[in-house]
Image 1 (cartoon, rainbow, N blue to C red):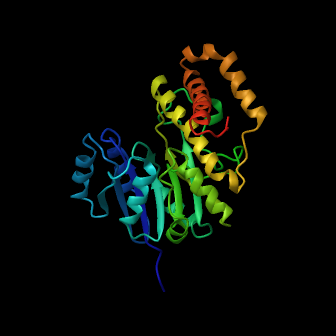
Image 2: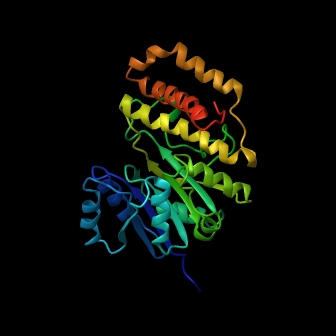
Image 3: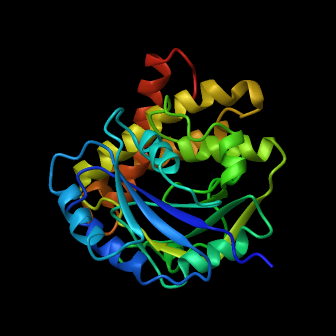
Amino acid sequence: MSGPPSLTVVVPARNAARTIGEQLDALEAQEYEGPWDVVVADNGSTDGTARVVEERVRRWPGLRLVSAAGRRGPAHARNVGVAGSDGALLLFCDADDVVRPGWVAAHALALQDHALVAGAIDLRAFWPHVGAGYAGPMTRPPGAREWMAYAAGANLAVRRDVFAAAGGFDEDLRSGEDQDLSWRLQLAGHELGFAAGAVVAKRDRTSFVGTWRQHFGYGRGSVLLYRKLAPLGMPRRDVRTVAGYVWFIGTKWWRAVQPGYRRLWAMTAAAQVGRVVGSVRYRTLYL
């Protein structure tokens, strides 16, 4: 009888020397009954990321470092990491987050019944002002209000054959490559699974400027995503949803200076501004 399928964890990294050590420690402590390894795909780091990983490679046979410097972006790094691996099951997490105990095993179990699996995101560990709506790890995949639910790239698992058939992550997308892959796979007939036990503590940006830049990029990138997937049925944003965001940004501007709310305001405002800028730049209306 054959044993559990082989498994590979892919970690894209760019200038993550400060955080990747904690993530690798958490991954090294994972348990899985079958053969498995971890591939860090260095996306052209200019800090000590490679050095941090190489130090661990010397004592951890299951860890490898590959160069993904050919093209900027997490989609490219993840694709390169997959190309440099052999696992029949593919798990993805980020270099600045921390997987919780049982993460690998929970995803492997869920992949027995689903070709694509989303894991749970927990914001409590690194976001001290997390709102009541984020009191614990999510209990379902995100994104259902946008079109279909999806697996976030920070906590995603997929069978290799299905990933390969879809062509991997779309490297032309500035952001939203995880949504794109998830939605294309669901349109191809693969149901999205959810592994509540596969928890990742997500280290979101906490500064106002950092949050603004990140979510402005998300908003602008969502226009490209819409332009690609609209022919496949991706809808425009609901007018009431857009109006609600605009109302929040305009009437709650004073929250931008409140420690408990400034990050939420920055996320909402930056993404909306990014969608406006993206709509103009890419000549595609998606507000």
